[in-house]
Length: 110
Image (cartoon, rainbow, N blue to C red):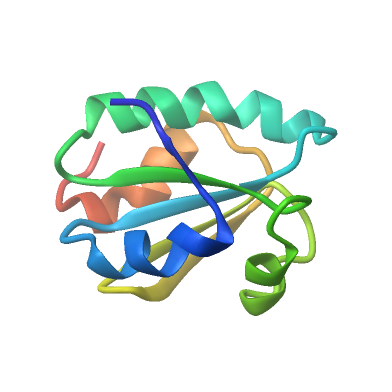
């Protein structure tokens, strides 16, 4: 399963209703580093299906959500657990670095 796209209208329901951690990738079409991170997040989503959901939120199309979570630079990835923002990663990182960041939430270490 690849990542899902969120909008202002689906954000709270998707993040709040999830029984697994949700990583929200705040991105924009014009953001080069965002495009580098996207395929890595898709891989992580596929490899960890059922343990974690990866979702994307376009900050240009949904600025209110970006403002709510004070996303000042992109890419920013925020891990939500039980509907609460519990971890923030700013900037493009390698797959191994992201897996390390997510390890706590996946319940295993890579």
